[in-house]
Image 1 (cartoon, rainbow, N blue to C red):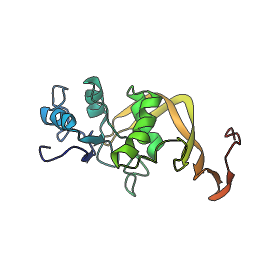
Image 2: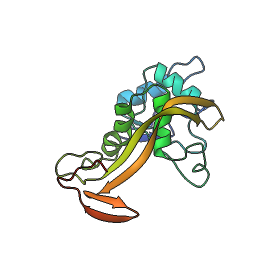
Image 3: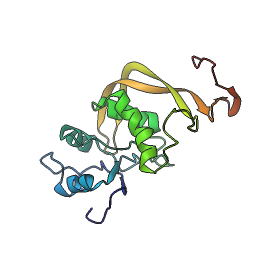
Image 4: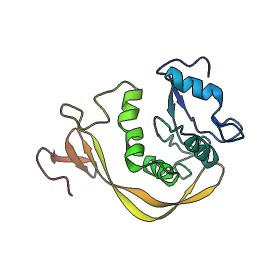
Length: 184
């Protein structure tokens, strides 16, 4: 940790014990706090071995939220426990983060972390990419890499995609959104 500089990104930052950023008493290890104070960026990178609920609960209880929430989806984790980014965001909502917090972690914060200010925003002049999702209120079971299960009250369901300002359906851009309603 001492070698990380401002702007460096520590991915897989909420690993389970024994390599967790939380100490056994539930506090944040001093070297982790010092790294954040130096400007190190903390990214979840949830894959097949890099996210535990016990660590997540301890870190959030200590007021240490991730800067970026990403999924490390690959052949080993796509069938669980990570599944996809929306599922990973749902886990953090189940742990107590708000919808605006998790969306910021996956969009504007992620873009800022890789110094791509034109991404992760819908401001005029930006790329014009957006994921459209619905917040569904239903009990949803989430599992971490250690097999612990929790039940959240909500989940996120993908409903559409806008790329470069065009609505995408079946892998084909239909038309520029422009002033059209996005209530499809």
